[in-house]
Amino acid sequence: MRFVSDIAVGLACLSAALAISYYIWKRRSVTGVARQASVTAIIGFIAFGASRLVDVGSTFSPGHVWLEFVQALTLGVALTASLAIWGLLPGLLAAPSQDELLEANKALSGAAERRAEELIQLAAAKAQLEQAVAERTQELDEANQRFENALKNSDISLAQQDCDLRYVWVHNAPKGMAAASLLGRLQSDALPIEADRILAAAKRGVMAQKQAASIDLPLEINGVTRYFHENIEPLWRKNEVVGVVTTCIETTSYRRQQEELRGLLRELTHRTKNLLAVIMGIARQSGRSSTDVATFVMRFNGRIRALASAHELLVESDWRGVGLRNLIAGVWKATSQEAEDKLTLIGTDYPLTPECAQNLALAIYEMQNNAIDHGGLLGPDGAVKIIWTAAKDEPGQGLKIVWEETGRPSSPASMQGDGFGKSFVEVLLPRATRGCSSVELHDHGLTWTLTLPQSNFIADAAQSLTA
Image 1 (cartoon, rainbow, N blue to C red):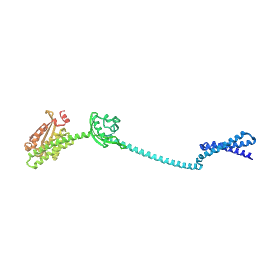
Image 2: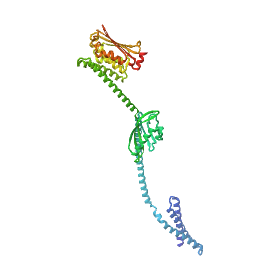
Image 3: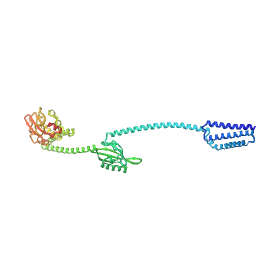
Image 4: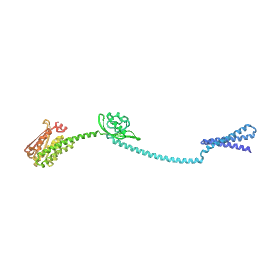
């Protein structure tokens, strides 16, 4: 019976060793402590099964020492393997069980699902962020386009400089200066010495005091002096001043306009003084020739209206001069609209200088007033014809003007007396224009002849008179 049991135990041990060997050969994923325990168990089973088979062999061949030695060796190996397995048990027990692996797998599956959801959410957030960035970029592009368009046709320039006053950004540089020629250069290398000295002091002061400042200065560009107004702001980065940003506005045209305005004001003051002097003279002369206040007011108002009419025409032409035809027609209409249809004008519309226009306007008024009060315009058939032609046959004279008054003989009360009209037409007007003036009375009316030198006409008209 022992013989059979030893053979059965030996074969069972060898079968178990073979089964474990087949298992770990097929399951190559078994590694680490589990593989070590499996190999140890295989060795133990083989050793113990071999000891049982050796014991069976000793039954047939008793007394052989080598069989006893083999049996003892195999039993020792089996015992050692069994003890070694105890040493591997902690590692085997530390490995997760099947249930634990299933739970862990479920947990991993849930984590994977959550990870997938998080990835979807992240993708949506990324898309929203990209859209927001794209919209913001588009807004910045549009703002930049508006900024560039606003400055493109203006005299405003922007520049950024570091603490060494080196240009790091320039937009819409002043005309005559290229932004590319300024970038990367020190201000001292790009601007004239005096301009650099003034600007450098102002900009270093802004960086030191951390406060904005403004300055006006002239700058010579391409040999031309131009004027600029500079607004200097400190440039902040992480609560530190790292440079300045300068807004430069060219004020050259503004300064020139101011100079022109000052010149115009001086000219206006001069002309106003002259005009007041003329008005005072008119008032004195009107007072001397007037017997009562009503007569003085009538004559004074008429002369002022004539002078005002000339001034209106001069203002319309920016005080460059007024045409002779327009002047006569304007004064005639302003002082007596009733007699407007009795006036005939023949001649080219030569432009008179402002001084000549004012004097001639007063003379026209005096002659018109005399014709209405004492001359040809008293009668129903009275008329005045004014003809002017170039006075080429008279040395130094530019234009000859002839006043032909018809209708009835002119009364000597005005033009033959000591009134203002006579003295102005025959004495003051020739003196002011350096011309000649004469009045001739005859049976059918009056003839007034006036010659004006070329100096009383603006340049183009004076040249045409000598052509």
